[in-house]
Amino acid sequence: MPVLKAALRLMRVIFTTATDISEFHRQVCIPNVVKFTTAILSLADSNGDPELKVSV
Amino acid sequence: MNVQVSTERKVDGDSEFVRAAVNFFVVDLKSNFMEIGNHLKSLLQFQLVSDTSSVTNLPYCLSTLTAECLLPSAHLAKWTSRINSLMYSKESGARWAGLCLAQKTSILSQTIMTDCAQSWLVVALPALSVREYILFSLSNLICLSIRGTNLCQFSKLHCVLCA
Image (cartoon, rainbow over all chains, first blue to last red; front, side, top):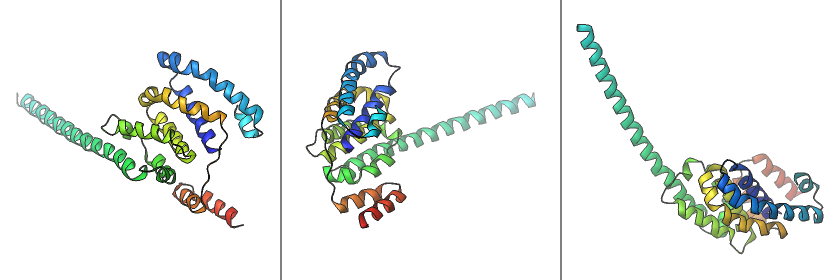
């Protein structure tokens, strides 16, 4: 699942690098982190890949 | 008195030297900026020109991209729009390449990341709920693994394929 992995990596970078810019954090990160976590939790439930489960 | 004059001269000489050095660095910086824009331009013109070539040339693009390349230049807008068009491509391979390029870009340049993050997230979030695989032909795979920096991996892959 290369696309999935690339998407995960990209979002990890987006959510973690700009923590010092509070405006960006409030407007972009917080609304999307909620969607991200719900999506990734359902993914970990349905997916048998242990590597993914560990990273979640 | 003599000593004073000589020190003044020395100061004059020093300031001239400093001026020359500054001029030299300014010229150097300008030529570097030219090169920076040029590298982005050449990547766009040759490596990322089509969806399939973007996928096969991705290792080269990722390894040659530096933070200096992403300083403001005339080609930066083209760069971000190319990443966006790759992400919205119908082919999953091109989408993968777009996501990888976006990740590298956001690591190297925080300003571009904050500008484009919203549009990238719109693509990246739905990708989590879809399970898809990229179909590579054998020649494509070999191309990719040769272009990747790790030759050891290539030999491993080759062994697996030939076994």
